[in-house]
Length: 431
Image (cartoon, rainbow, N blue to C red; front, side, top):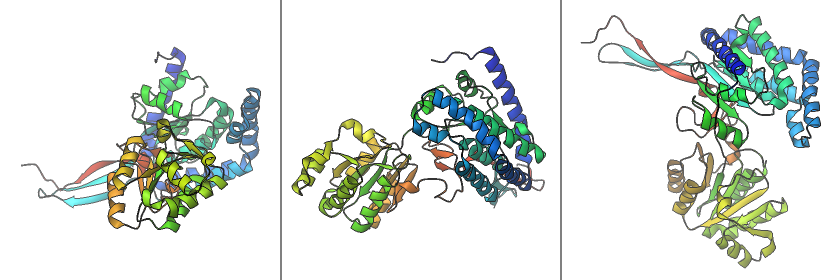
């Protein structure tokens, strides 16, 4: 249930929106050299101001400790030299990416004499709402700057001092290059009301990108009057087909689950063709159990593995809920299927349209899988863990989208741009 925000917050957000809209025009007109100057300056500024950043961050850490936050939470919040190095490397990497803005493609002569093409342009004003990790402030701002957008950032209240300090340095770098420092604005309030006001500023903000937990994203999707680029769940599947190369299948299915448990592109359900139980599934089960992964299985999987001599106690019975759950933990659900159709049906019924892969040497099966599985990333003989902007060659990413419109899959620089039609004429008139 949303209610109108407090008057002072509404007017503050309104002012920020107006500043952002005005700044977006200067950003859209800025040359590649100017935008790169901002990023080079920012990398240097972060390096020179490490002590100030750590000081500001310490206020956030102390507040988190006083509030009784757990160690993992505090770890995500921490700005130490290693995290600052990572931020600087990220800014330099975005500096080195090709500038997509102004590129004209598909120019074609029409019978009337005009030539019609498309030009890549910034979206305008991007609102980014995120939780805990302060490095998102720098990543998000740098991507938006390079793509010629203005941005309004709302970090988590737990990182307030860190984000404010980072935003201050970003503003200084913009001003040093002669661009409006208001091109990147950080909300100066920890009030939750501000999020509600921000996601309804549709006359100033063009798109919202939420980065954070499912509840945050659900709330924003429900209440925003602005388009949202998002993904809610990463229920990712690997399907080991009857024509899989066993060695490849074992290597990929192990990596997709155990390389890291917390990312959204980690496999949560393993689908295995009946004929591959002994050759592929049994060796995989041994690997998973050795790595202390809890296995939740369908009845057919249980009886097939027990017939091969696996102890009953090493398996848990999967519930209907398990097929739809993103564990982000060392837990894996496993289901046997009789053919490719059953595998695709399972993914379409229970998946979240994020990332799914097939392990097969059968060209027809591979092509059917990538055509019929309706996910943002579909793969053949590769780990789902590759679904990210950096691995896809987009340089950096602002997030992953399971939307159908505008951006889908990992969202890099290009996802923060749009296209407009351009027409080159020579005095033609329409008859």
